Length: 167
Image (cartoon, rainbow, N blue to C red; front, top):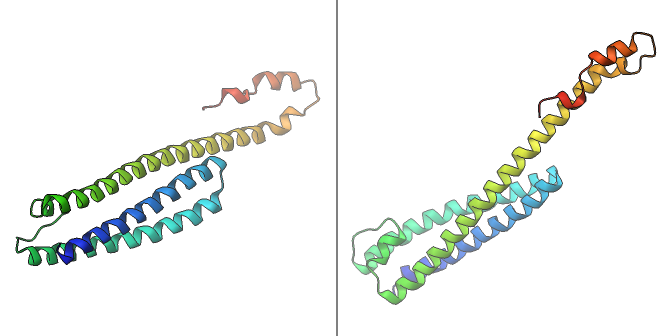
């Protein structure tokens, strides 16, 4: 087996571990979003950014490996794993293809968790906006609600209900 193919396997394994780490953090973030723990979310986001920076390194390593593999196997230069699979024997190809598929599955799961997190964040922001509007309307009506004069009953009829607000 060519040295560059061994390097590619090792690189794909480490890349998979990185994606697994980001997926784990995204799932943890989901729980924190539900609980509204903003500081913990920020800390997890910083950890995710470290993983993402390292992932960029893997792309550079993979390109270098493809260049080396092309020379070792005496083939034209390839740009991705799929192209490389066309030039290597079936046994090696299955292993590399399996690693690639695992990474793609993890990326798909990560995308789904991130979409759920985005939805949860949007709902949280909508809830915060609703509460801000509710508090603002109560503050605007506040002093009038505690009026014990004869005109108090007339004012209370003209005041909007809290439930008349846009939701």
